[in-house]
Length: 182
Length: 332
Image 1 (cartoon, helix red, strand yellow):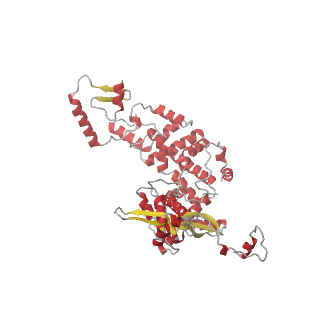
Image 2 (tube, chains in turn brown, blue):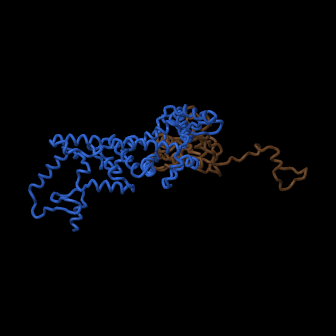
Image 3 (cartoon, helix red, strand yellow):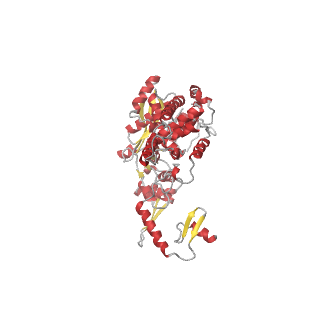
């Protein structure tokens, strides 16, 4: 047996303090859960060497932000407000309107709100890369280390079930032949 | 009393208080001395100009009795040295020469005042041979698959002047050596330590001397990495050679992980697979550096020099030393 991990101090240090690049696919995912995963990795809290002053956060690339899925009625009920300070400039946008205007804004604001409220927040936001669709630029694709598993299991649509699975599903009662389903 | 304690606890004493020694403080309180300030300032300026005083050997500092110190040396190490051999071991050739020079300069007649001291040359050679043989045997016993160059590198490191002088200085061998110059140069100190080991072997036997070397020199290997001591230029070639000797398939490097490939600080993890099974993986700044590191990790694993190997058991009795092959079989 033996240790497979590197042992000379220079390599330990390089490998321990290197910055990774994580990829998250936000298709059909709740933006809050995506944002919390992003904020954990941007701060470096997933590493045992974490310290708030150490600047050991990693890069996070989120793709398909256009296809995020709020639960409940949040698309109509969640309101994003902003005020520039000048009179008459109070704007309130619903999540749907905000998403139409900028497909990456919802996740960006969510992550911004979940990061620690200090000067390191802006640096961490610079390390967050958001893309509305799954088209990523080449240099970011080259840098990626790992894809993180999605927080929410996407439920299948009825059209995605095969006829055998639909038949195999237990029925509560068998309707007679001339019964008409609405 | 309280005032004294308050004064002692200050970092710098005020002008009229002087520490004579640890328990005694002199205070010029009856009248303030007008010359004290000027004198103190001049002494400070002189000390700053000249720098710190040169180190003095322990034998020239107060409370030093050579015979008592030599006995204490042997008692401290819990070894029974023969005192004449030990005293001979501490005498160097340069010391004898400088003594004769000094006596000649003083005009003393050489016939009446010959130095009856023998130098430690033979003991030094004897001790060096014994140490190197013992360390080679120990290395080969505890790392059976380590090749000859590796064993030679480890033995060379342990008997090199850095390690030996570090151990000798901390065992107070430097205070007892008689040499021409002070501070004692590294080679002379190393020679004196070898002579001490030779004296130990001749007084108490090779078993006790072996235990001494094990306890003081082999322990310097703790936390040391193999390739710090053994400079290997081409680890991949060496690995290929080792694997062909053992008949295992040759290693194929594969990129396992990469991070930030197009940034200024890339990281690559390269794994070496032989016959589709992972041998070792290593990180690096570039793919080539990572491959080299993976080869080094694989070599460390092959030779049994990993960090998580079973540490050498220093509490075991000396029968272990006589059967190195059996120990190699039982250890990992």
